[in-house]
Image (cartoon, rainbow, N blue to C red; front, top):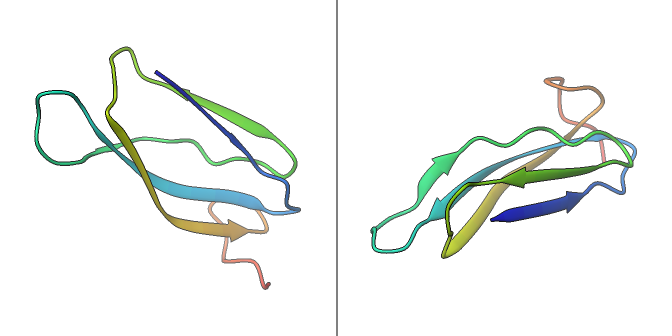
Length: 70
């Protein structure tokens, strides 16, 4: 499975992700990478995914920095 995310802002984008896989209950947290300003990121998993849930989107001036003022 492949997921693509595009960041069209001037700030770094971070978020959390969970996946639901066939024949298993619940969402399982999965690691994702921050996305730099004006860049795209590709996340992949070697197995089928029934659902991808994204949450806690945050924009910062630099990776791991404080939240950017909107």
